[in-house]
Length: 175
Image 1 (cartoon, rainbow, N blue to C red):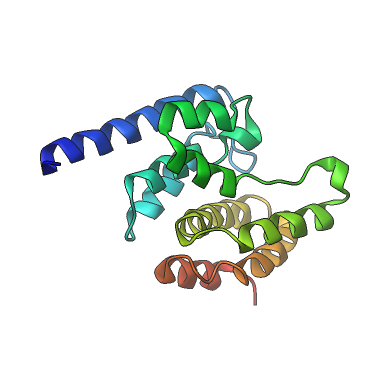
Image 2 (image 1 turned 90 degrees about the horizontal axis):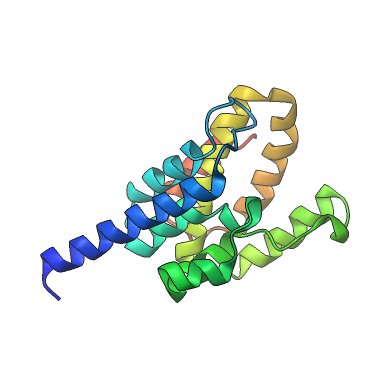
């Protein structure tokens, strides 16, 4: 495939993912600063863009919270963006529900799920953790104690992700 055609496909994928995520998140706001929620997926995508990545990883970064936090489904994502993006989003979507128990139990289930994820999904998750850590640390110091401990545990299973992002995430995590 010609480089120009490949670049156009990549840009179209990103633009479509951004439009989908923007629509899906609608009027949602970030808990920690009140900004439109879409700023988070955009930030995650930009963090992923800073390291070796694929167009599918950028799309997944933009879409990573849509199934978890909106009415969007994995089937819709697969139909709109293909199986590679849908698979990454599936890995990035928490599998736990309140039915599974308290937060600690749920986060452990989600951690176990991510432990088996491919490196591309782990790289996107590292970017997600980095952006969330910055926001939570600044916006909710009390919750940071909980999130920081969860982050440290999660980092134990994300070693296959990008090493630069892993180092950044480890630097943000509490001692």
